[in-house]
Length: 425
Image (cartoon, rainbow, N blue to C red):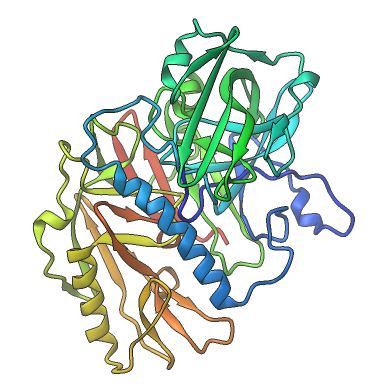
């Protein structure tokens, strides 16, 4: 389970409220699920009051920082809980998909989160939950798992209150607690019987997310593990731009229909954090020039957990300080504008139009070149432009803004991840 900096992916309630855009009622089909941005016109989580661009950026950056700090805290820990790899990153998912839980099905919202394993939803009677709750009493296929269940050993801090397996976790100043449960869960048109998830009974703290979480990590309670026979531990997504008026991307489950022409880089295994998607970042190019980065800043170290991960839940890419400073300085030199300002945690902002270079992430066997739309934040009036990256304490995180309008394929059986440009806004 997780804590969030910037956001994972949520499942939307697709009831057509009065006046809602009819495009919001498009149905999922096959093993393809629509993906919506959290601020989409279709989303119940969009702000009740429009935020200014500066307020939006600063709020997102603050939440993003919480997620990045947790991800970085996973580095150099000496012990591992099977479900702990991203367990606290559940705070503010950016993208949402639709899931039907129970018999008859109840449509719930869940965060699509590659750095988390477990799934959980707020349940009826939950104290402190602020979203639509799953009414487990109305489902004829729902059951609570007992302490003897094997899955009870795979959740954080399991306890036995009576016969039920309960769990609790703390992140930031917030806590969540619930029962480990099972029910039929349907994604698109594919039912998964006896899907194990957390049925939340209590939450406390301002960082608790309002929606459920769908863990897409590699741990034993993740979607990949629980649907291995159905999807063969393979999935891909295309995240729409936050600037798109439609806010619709797709989550494609299973090997069928994945792109043929796509370059891959190997997935790396970190025994201490086996759920995270580590890749081998070997260099970064600004424009056509490779940046001089100390090798230790991007090297993968399985003994400490240092290295680079691909994460759907963080909004803005983070690089450890030496790598970030080198990339930032090379970017500034190419822009050639003397007056550099800052905004919150972004230290490379401009109040005049700029001609920005591309930035290329160089992985083993695969380069990903990002255009300006994946690199720059623009104010609503266009008066401020910022480089959408920031420094991190200990772990490089390739985040969702840099992944937007790309098809990202996770092929776990072949231990590889692929990236290809794809318009999905």
